[in-house]
Length: 366
Image (cartoon, rainbow, N blue to C red):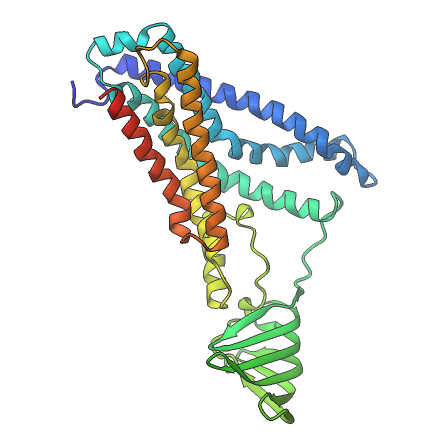
């Protein structure tokens, strides 16, 4: 029995049912309160656009609710765990379980298994619902809650690396192999020194040779300060057309696979991707944070069982849980700034607080 994490089916179902009902009850309460406050703060902006009314307000609510659910689901797991364990402790049910021979980990096992299910649901919900609603809401907010225009396909001021050289264009129009460039410049570099600048009023992609063609090009020699006409110039055999059409990437508006594809394209174009890589790994670590909450909140049931100060134990468990969220946001911010490697920025808080929770549990109860 000591090596069986689920020694009693009845107790396991009882614990899991209590955990899930309290978690989703807390989540429903948070969503209702926070959505009401959010709507009070933004309804004026939605209705400010001529013609908007109740239908647009409900549309805003439909796009905003998935974001609130995704943001506060881990908080709900933490609060649901604390409410459940404090109630069990107050009614001496934890004492009865330990008297029956169950260890602290066996008592928490149904909660951790249920939290794993919540994490899987959270990941699927983020991928299927939250990413799409975020993209739609961002586009709607960008036009001040008016009609969203269709994408014209025109990009301004993109840049791409061609080996050690930098290629820029003032305007990029079209799609695929029909891409057209305007005001093209190539900055040729030798090491860290700029040697020549090639300029052309226009350029296009030539599918037959898989290269780019600049028309009426001229070259400026930086060292000599002289310029000369080059006519037609071919360049960028390794530059794909889609690398010029890469716009700013919003990681919250993309699924895991879409963000990974965007990072690959940005990397091929020579653009920095550390911030996006941290967000990519965080799409996995964020839902899994639900697994930590039963362990961090277990102090409400086990931590100071003989002291009788239930409120203090609940506050301590809440403090551990909220400390994780603070550390997670801080680590992700450091990853976005480039101070932490992307993988470390996303996963370090998870493993750190997993060790902290297990240490507290072993030192106090096991």
